[in-house]
Length: 273
Image (cartoon, rainbow, N blue to C red; front, side, top):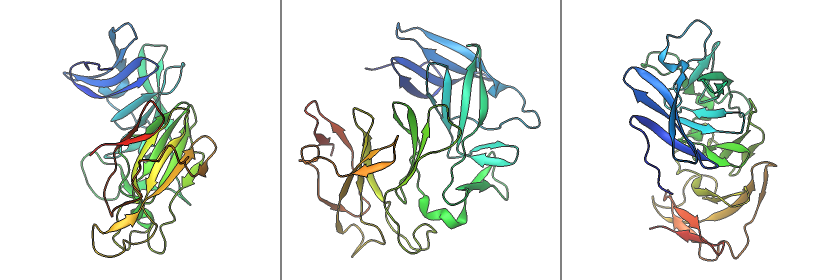
């Protein structure tokens, strides 16, 4: 299905036939929603008003509708969100009485403590930095992976998933897929990202291609085994995929290479060059 986004759109997300996007209209920032009949409707937001002391600050770069109550899960990994001295790349919003989009609070990311800390120093607009002890989590997937009932934040660098169930203000479960080994989370040594690629599957699971944990073996871009796993994000369980699903999947891959794949009508992975 192809949708023509309205002018000035900042990304478009889809849920059950309804598309949503923030869009710039002159000096205004609006929420545009497209109903299944094809009609786009603009709604006001608090984003084009001056921030007051104590307000949640930050601009959603991705905005995903999470349920029938017109709630939204938002992310911004470039600048972040800030509220009462706390920071996070994730926040919750709501279309209040179907008239105006308003923030509902932060969704913190934690891994034995905060993943992001208030920024020290000056960079225009940015309010957060990745905690130095967790530098190996970078890079992050710049948008959440959506499954029915949850949004998933992905650390490509260390193979960690934060599952934020719709309406929740915390990530649970937090799934560690690939133990990074000594110095890995701290980013003390240079290593390729732990995740080669991932894809939501029909039924709510996610299939993920992982590289072996630890530093790359051999020369850069040398071939390494690919480890295939299927995750149930709602329970946090990790299992091996069926042989049929990955029948045509690569078993080795150049270190640091990214995989792009889809699922065909027969339930098998198909790979893009």
